[in-house]
Image (cartoon, rainbow, N blue to C red):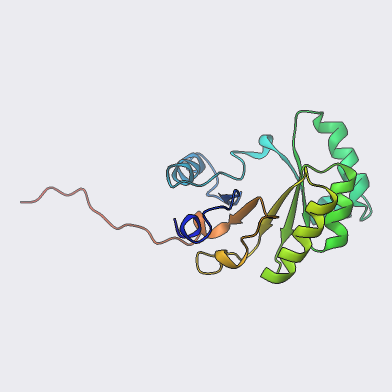
Length: 169
C-alpha cells in the first residue's frame, strides 16, 4: 500500500523472490504473497529460466552464449531472466534475447540510471530490481523504467504469529 500511495501512476509490480521454504510449505508462502497483493517471482523452477552468475560462468562468462543455450533448451514459450551486475551485462542480456533483466544489488540511483538505459534500447524487456530491497528502502527504487521490484524479506525473516490452540479451562 505504501508504494501505491506514494507512486499512484507506477505500473510496476512487487514480487517476492524465489527464496522460500523448501518442500510443500512453499505453496503457502507463495499463496501469502498473492493474498497480500504481490506477485510470486515464480511458483517453481519450471516457470522461468533464470540465469545466474554460475550459469554464465559455465558458458565461459559469455552472457549471449548462455541466453542462446537456454533459449534452445527452453523453446519459444519459456521466459528467460538474466541476473546482471552492471549496465554492460544488462545490455548484453537484453540484446541476446533475455525477456527479463534483473539488476541485482544496485544502489537506487545507479539502478534508475541503468534501468532507463536498458528500457531506452530494449523497451520490450522487463527490468527487475532485486537484492537487499526492503519495505523501508523500496520507494527509492521505484521509477518508470523498473517493471518489477522483488523483495526477499516478503518470504524470509518475517516475524511469526505465536498462537495456541489450547482450550480454556
